[in-house]
Image (tube, rainbow, N blue to C red; front, side, top):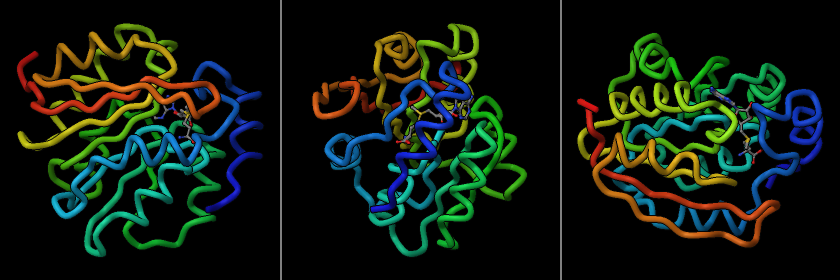
Length: 191
Ligand SMILES: C[S@@+](CC[C@H](N)C(=O)[O-])C[C@H]1O[C@@H](n2cnc3c(N)ncnc32)[C@H](O)[C@@H]1O
């Protein structure tokens, strides 16, 4: 596992609202969120807000050899350090916002995704931006596509309920701070 702590702390101090936490995700939480995914069915996964890459490296470790991972990150330093730390040809690091996910997919010649994993701090994004990101997410996913999210607060829940038909949740204590976990399926393209 890469030591991703320093970049997470320094970027949090620079922009606490967008980053959300000074600590990278714990491996316990990474395992809990990614454990239920059926990797044999994932050809394209999108990660929003990879930050220092705690989920990114573990997603790459679990993904099929011919699958792709697009990681979309607004933080220039996070994006730069992820590119320099990882030479896996399956990873595409995009410096930009999850709100433009369909634009980023088109620019890289990619179609709809099988999975989105997000740790964006929806509680500080504001309801309009959060809703716009969730609407774009439902459009970016195949009808069989799914979403997995880890969140300190529950602001994301009504957004998932509006844009997905099925939702399952759990709680992970072994993380600083502890997090709500969500898995959603049935993206609604008309919400
Ligand atoms: C909670 S942190 C992710 C932590 C990461 N999983 C780790 O363990 O290091 C949230 C990340 O989302 C990024 N972010 C915030 N708003 C974003 C947006 N609209 N699009 C893409 N990334 C965004 C932040 O820069 C930050 O890296």
